Length: 208
Ligand code: ADP
Ligand code: MG
Ligand code: MG
Image (cartoon, rainbow, N blue to C red; front, side, top):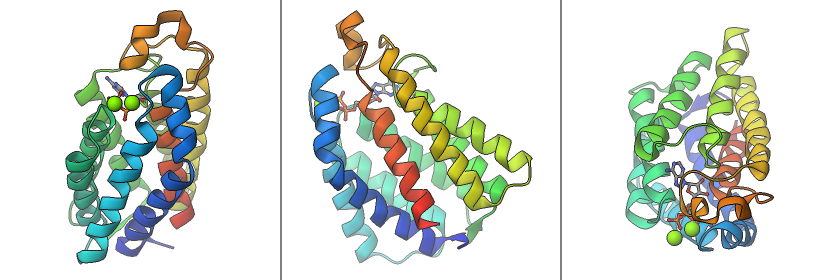
C-alpha cells in the first residue's frame, strides 16, 4: 500500500489498538522506574485521537499527523504528551502537502519527529529515553532508503531498529525523566517511552 492518507488513518487506528493492548505492560514498566501512568496516558491520548480522526476528513498524511499532535498534546500530559505531540507536529510539517510519502519523504518525516523529541526533551542516545528507540530507527530508515528500499521496507527497518534500541535501554542508567531519580536502580528495566515508541512504529508497518 502507498503511504497515503488512508495509511496514515489506519496507522492511527492501529496505534490506538496496540497501545490499548499493551496498556498494562506500559503501566508496569513505568511503575518500575517512573510513576506508573505511561500506559494510561497514551491510551487516553490515542482514544481521543481516534475520535478526532473519526470526526474529521483528511486530504494528506500530514493533516492526519497534525490532528494526532493536537490531540496528544491536549490529552496525554506528563513528559510523553508534549514529546510525542511535538514529534507528530514536526512530522506533519515535514510531510507538508504530499498525498503520499515515498521513501525519502518518509525518512524526512521520521527524522523531523525524532528531532522534535530531541529539541523538546534534550535527551541524547544513551540517556534511557524514547530517543534510544527513535534515533536508531531514523538511522536505519535513512540507510534503507539510501539502498533503494521501498517505503514499506524503510518503515520496517525503522521499527526493527527501534525495537533493538528499546532493548538497549534495559542496561542503562537514566539521565532524563523520572527514571533519572533512581540512579543505578533503573538498571535492568526497560524505558516505557522507548517501548511505546516501538509499538507505534510497528503499527505504522502493519498499516502499510
Ligand atoms: P511522566 O514521566 O511525566 O509520568 P510518561 O510516563 O507518560 O510521563 O512518559 C515517560 C517517558 O517519557 C519515559 O519513559 C521516556 O521515554 C520519556 N521521557 C521522559 N523525559 C524525556 C526527555 N527529556 N527526553 C526524551 N524522552 C523523555
Ligand atoms: Mg509516567
Ligand atoms: Mg506522570
